[in-house]
Length: 229
Ligand code: DC
Image (cartoon, rainbow, N blue to C red; front, side, top):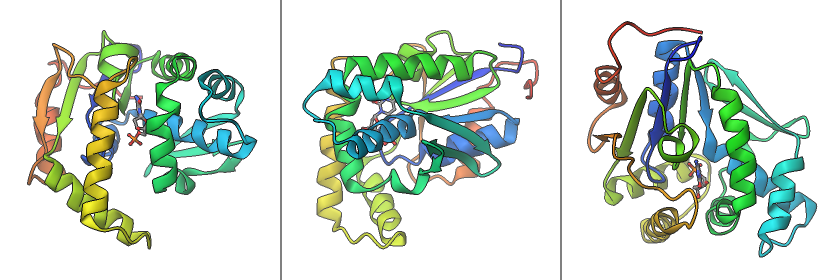
């Protein structure tokens, strides 16, 4: 436990709804919420804007090291700024998802640069950080590690609805194929792969509402009462 409270790592595959759960948990505890996936996506956006060659991992790493990325916690979650511009709603397009998974997240240099920032943000504890490698690489000593999983059918349904709510029309078949490809990429990455840490607790979200999942996770917290920022 750091001076500001516990460090909570939540890892799991794409489209599981873990952001919603992690955000709600952070709000409940009064903790900082960090979406590490948004950081990888932000590097992709910065690289697109700079016209970088996505086949060049070192060029992507240079972008990660030099881009002006700022995260600002707000009651509803997190705002992401790139070069002073709020970009959160530009980060969740199919193109950014695909490039991030296939290129940005595979660059060792990108990962090294982002892990440094993630550790800085989490240095005082009092943080809920979600991603793929938080419990394994970023905070191997986290006070609580959750591996959050949901069946691919349910993840597909959620993602189709999420896209539709943002005016992006995609068929369930396309979305499922995307999710399966991303699972394979996430799990097969040479660095920072999605894997359940031996000491991570498996929490399944299938068919459960956020409150139920939240109660399950709160019940896993070490005794002694939550610290608060
Ligand atoms: O959680 P997300 O779907 O927004 O993540 C975007 C991409 O970044 C996804 O392809 C996996 C990758 N990622 C990663 O490699 N490591 C993390 N800690 C978080 C995300």
